[in-house]
Length: 357
Image (cartoon, rainbow, N blue to C red):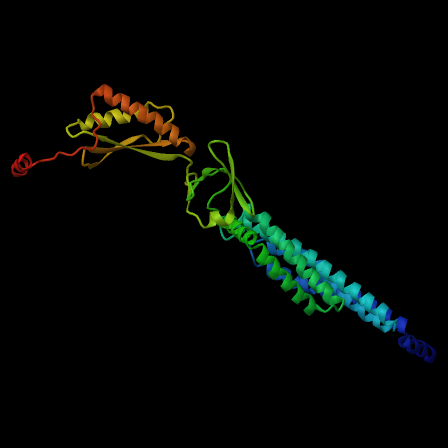
């Protein structure tokens, strides 16, 4: 019995045996900790209706397990009393592996979350289907930077000097590319706020108008009626008044044509002629029906307004020209007078006598 105790005591004093125990203990501890933590988190997640928390918990299995395992391996390496450079390298590799595993876990959790959010929280916040690519890229960059930062810490690299240098470089780059950065931020907020989307017909303060072709991070491209592609910096658009003619619940656009007729005209006849012209045009929508409004008594005549709907906003000019032509011809045929501004001058007799003198 004493021999067995002596052998056991000798083994416990052996460095390799102690390291082996730490490795086995690390494996057991990693499995046990992973099971306990995941069980607790799963129980909490079961109280919610969503499935996103269950997916994220499944992703956390490997990071939790390998973090505890490599922690034990790091302690085991120290017990071997190897040269300092070998111990430092081994511990640095273990920490780097753990950081990489956690980085991949964060990346996959992030992707699962924004995908779930964009599907279940439609039109809420900035995470939407069309902003997914930019949020995806920004998330990747942030996770990569954090991962690189912790890897440098794992190898005892002096972060302070690198941080100062990086700050100076970022400042110089930001000053040199301030217009580009302004366009990038404007592009992000345009994608998030969605004042327009590809395919919409828009008008800007500067007179530019056309269909939105693409929305990029730096610029927006629109196609004009002349088939000319215009590239506009996003910072310019962000500071402009945008009229989105395709932004309503329907793509149809209402057009107003204002007409003056002479005093004494038959207003029922005027109303009937205008409605018939609009209804007989194949380019005017039948629903809603065209309508005529008697707006006001003008200085030279009665003001009417013809209201009708068209299918596409780019046809506004052409259809207005068509109906204006038809209105003028029909008014001439129906003997409906279109007045022009005129003034009647009254001269006092006393002023006339002075003029003759």
